[in-house]
Amino acid sequence: MSKQHPTPPTRPMREALAVPRGPVTLAGYDPSARPGAPVEHNRDLRNDDALLQSLQERLWAESTAGGTRSLLVVMQGIDTAGKGGVSKHALGPLSPVGVEYTGFKAPTQAELRHDFLWRIRKRLPAAGVLGVFDRSHYEDVLIVRVHDLVPQEEWEQRYDVINDFEAELVDSGTTVLKIFLNISFDTQRERLLRRLDRDDKHWKFNEGDIDERACWPQYQVAFDAMLERCNTEHAPWFVVPSDHKKYRNWAVGELLRETLEGMDLHYPQPSLDIPALRARLAPPH
Amino acid sequence: MSKQHPTPPTRPMREALAVPRGPVTLAGYDPSARPGAPVEHNRDLRNDDALLQSLQERLWAESTAGGTRSLLVVMQGIDTAGKGGVSKHALGPLSPVGVEYTGFKAPTQAELRHDFLWRIRKRLPAAGVLGVFDRSHYEDVLIVRVHDLVPQEEWEQRYDVINDFEAELVDSGTTVLKIFLNISFDTQRERLLRRLDRDDKHWKFNEGDIDERACWPQYQVAFDAMLERCNTEHAPWFVVPSDHKKYRNWAVGELLRETLEGMDLHYPQPSLDIPALRARLAPPH
Image (cartoon, rainbow over all chains, first blue to last red; front, side, top):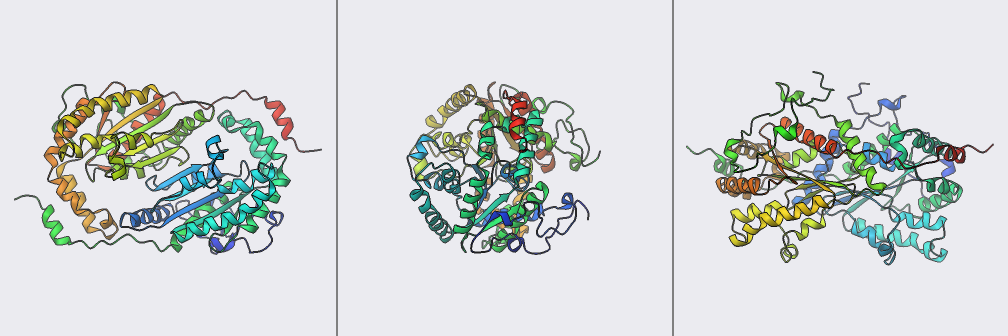
C-alpha cells in the first residue's frame, strides 16, 4: 500500500474500540493489540488528513450560519500513554481555525475553591469548535481517588455528576468523544527510560512520574471504575491500545473521522443571488 | 528540487519582507512579487515543517521549566487576503499543544463597553504559547477609521496606544510578529467570484464583503497609516505579497521559522540524577 493513501479500517473503529456495557477490567484489554488495523506494518497506517480537515471545516462552517453543534474530544491515559503525541500527530493536521486544545494540570488554588467542573466548563468548545481535552474532569475520579484528595463519599458521587454533566453537554449540541489510551506497565517503563536517554526529552521528565508509577495498581482500579460507571449511551468510552504509537495515532484519527461523519456535517448553503452578486463584482467598463 | 525538501529563501525573509521606516504607500508594493523565493514554480516552495514543529515545541518546553517567553503572530489583510488560509496551511503543521488561534470578529456589545484593547488582552498568549491573531487590535485603526466608528481624535490616538501596548508585550517576554497579507484589487475580485463558483465556499460569502470592497481606496490609506505609524523597532511590520497563495504560505512559514530561530530556543536541561532515576525504573528482580 502506498504511503500516500489513507488506510481504511477493517471494521468501524467505534465498534472495534467500544467498551461493552457492564463490568470493566483493563486487565482484559491488550495494550499492544491493533483492532481494525488492516495491515501488518504500523508504518502503513495513514489517516485521510484531507477528509479530516474537510469534516472539521464543515463543523466550523456550520456555526457561521447559526449552527450550534460542537465536538469535544476527551483524552485520558496514564503518564506517557501519549495524550500529547496524539494531539500532535492525529490532531496536528487539523487547521487551528476552530480547534482548541486544553491541557489540564493540577488545579490552581483559585480553581480548587470552585466545584470540580468549574474550570472544565470554562474550556468547553463553543459552537463550531472541535475542543480537545488532554486530561479532564476525569482526573477528579482518577488522581483524586488514588490519592484520597477528597473523601470517598465525595468522589463516589462524581461518577453520576459527570454522567449528568455530559448528558447536558450532548443535549446542548456537543458530541462527546471519550478516548482512553491504554499502555502496559512495561511500555511506561520504556518510555520513561527513553525520556532519560534523550536530551530533548528531559524537559518532559518529572521524578513525580516514578512516584505515580508506584500507584499503577490503584490507577487500574480507578480506570476500571471510570470506564464502567461513565460508559453511557450518550457519551461512551473507547479504549485505544497504545503500546504502538503509530497504531494509536491512526486509531484516534479514525475514531475522529467516524464521529465527525456520524454528525452528518455539510457546508451551509446560504441563499445567494449569484447572478446579481456576479454583476456587482464585474470590473467597471 | 524534490517536493519533500524544504526550500531555503535566497535571503533572510525578515529582511526581504521588512517595511522600511518612514512613509509607506502600499501602491509601491507588488502583491504578485515573490521576494526571497529561490525557485520559479510556487509549487516547489516548501517550509521545513519538522523544524517549525521542533522550534514551537521548544518554546512550549521552555515554559514548563519556568520560562516566560511567548510569541504572538498578528495577521491583518483585507477580505480574501488569506488569513484563514495561512492559519490552515502555514500554521496547520504545528501541534495544537501550545498553539492558540483567535479570530477577532466585530466586537460584541459587552466588548464595546471596554477599552478597545480589553478583548485583545484576554487572548494574549501565556508563557510558552504561540498565539495567532486573525485580525487584531489593528481593526480599531482600520475598519473603525474607514467607517468613522469613533471620532477621528479617538482613532488618531490609537496608533500611539498600540505602540505602547506592543512595547509592554515585548518587555514582558512576548515576541510580536506582525504580518500584512497584501493582495491586489483584481485578486480580491477573483477570489470573491470563486467563492460564488463553489458550493463548498458559499458559507464564506458575505454580501457585506462587496460593500467593503467599495471602500478599497480608504482601506489602502488606513493600511498605509498602520504600516507607517506602528512600524516600530520592537514590533515591526512585514508585508507578504499574497496574490500567489503558495508563495504567501511559504513566506509566512519562513518568517515564523526565522522569528523562532531568533529567539534562540532550547529544550530545558533540568538537572536529573540519571543513574538514580534509571535504577528506580529497573524492573523488580
